[in-house]
Length: 447
Image 1 (tube, rainbow, N blue to C red):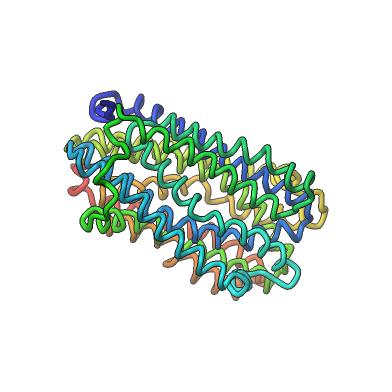
Image 2: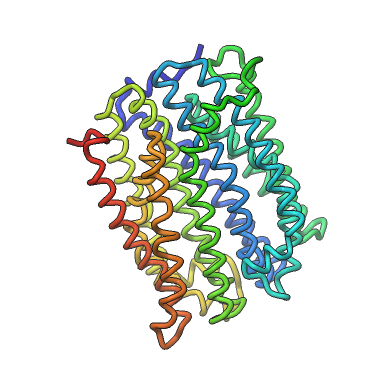
């Protein structure tokens, strides 16, 4: 049967690229889709629709947060069990992922649909953007169960030793999405509803592709009888490990809500649209770092479970190096080519002019973000939930929320204070990551 024993044998640099490259390609494809989606909406529905998409994004992130609570935690646990050669529990993790995702996604869907408009207004929607945001999120929520299963199975595929299959599933979803977007938005004149429907349909097709792998009888980790009943030990441990990315995503959502409302107060809907453009740029490269993290996760988890601590640490150091290089590209684009980047999303001259300055401000701290992201992922990968949770919350809750509320008071132009709160919080969170890493030297066997 197929099993990822190579994780404890092959050279780390070779493994990292073998597992990270498919994840990077998949995450980059996803982020490029988001850019293309924004371009279609921006040019086909207008600047207000683009602003509405920015308002809806935190709600989408909340939905994704519940998926990461299950998917990331379970995939880390799967890698650890495979390293320990506990194959019975590894298979039970797979069944528990499906059941937990169905339960949580159904709850999120019902709650979201019942209180959709109040949630969107709280997230920064105005009378001009609420209609677009409602149309988009309504369809996304109806497809929420598919979204959760899609992301959960992709995470399991990587930890089960199939990073290329996981990548293929993602690319299938992205390609179908990009094909359907112009058909639904322009051809069928469905506007933002068409963009949302294209997303749901593409994920449904990808899920169908994913499950074929887990029905393969030659696979060590696969669907079979006896794995579907929720196991208390597996459930609680997976949720504990997944709590870090879950809280990170939840905190990020509330940060975006606060920033959106601060931007609406000091700059209006166009400032929110500017933030949306900048987010699209940083999102592309942050997704590449997340791809690196996804590649590192099974390597670090497996070798930690197998007590190969030197290999675990080498995977961490290499991932930090690559992540810094990736985020360096964001720094260059944001600082030197902000107008060119903005013109990709809109031809509105006012929005272009309003975006250049904040893009340079926000991108000024990009060189240190990669390290902070990878450090938090290390603790998630090896099941150290407490430290992972703490690091996931430092940037969002400990630093960014207070700074976003306080720094506008320090500037003659309060809007500048909102923009500057982002790189300042990035700097503080990177320093905190260094402190936590050094304090954990013995537990990580760095000495």
